[in-house]
Amino acid sequence: MIFRKYHVVIFHENRGTSRQLKMRGWVCMLGLALFIGLACSTAYLWSSRYKAVFLADKLEEATKTIQEQNIQIASMGGKLVMLQGDLSRVQQFDSKLRVMMNLDKELADIGNGASSESAVNTGGPMPTSLQPLPLYRQELLARRVHSLLDQMSTDTRVEELRQQDLLHAMRENRELLASTPSIWPVDGYLTSSFGQRVSPFGTGSSDFHKGLDIANRVGTPVKAPAKGVITFVGWDGGYGNCIVINHGNNITTRYAHLNSSAVKVGQKVQRGDKIGAVGNTGRSTGPHLHYEVRVGGVCVNPLRYILN
Image (tube, rainbow, N blue to C red; front, side):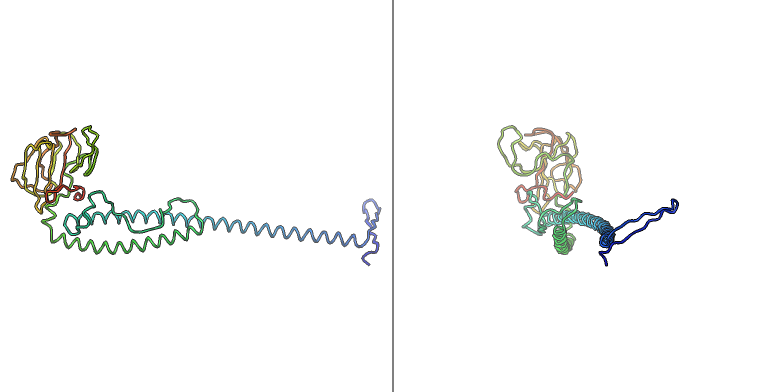
């Protein structure tokens, strides 16, 4: 039946005429099938487009979320690094006080330039970039942050115990603290540190510098860094005009190349008292103060005592 011939009559209402079309049944079925196929394809394409738009929106939303998480993680990492630095400075300050009070003999190398570094191994520097991170890097970073937090929590608890111990010792050693040289003796610029250096006198050789050179204008006041007794005032060879203070506990301080002195032998001084003025006397290349700290007659790095 489907292969029979069919006649389609088309009437023109206004003209009063008609027109006949002859076609077989299978042609009609083919046209109907094509129409249905086209309709289904169109519906499928629209459905796929809707899904694609929906997934694109979801992907964009997820990308923004990941970027925000990356920013938060990177910010947290930066803050933790800063906190780690703060804790390290507190530990160094604690160590300086302990050296000054002879609580920890093994920390005596702090003033010689040894830096206290945290024992936390975070597996590399914390990322501070705000660029999106791969998921595996986010997981690695999260583990490192947790590891750092755990280690810093432990360090903080240990440091609290050390500070309590130190506070107790300070209460029992107020006299020792008052006699320990713990401030800069003069304002100015540090031009030469303690230790090996190239000779400033143009010889090109290396020599050992026994103290600190602090440059400033002639006449700048020089202050006592702690209480003590003046044991020497006068000319001392290459040191020029020189003052020596005995602080007790085998600690003495020396102030060289002075322009003038404001104290005399046997005089007692307190921390902050003026003892002289910066000069350019003796073996000197310019106006400055040469400052030494000696323990038992041996020169040590004055920076291990300076707290301000």
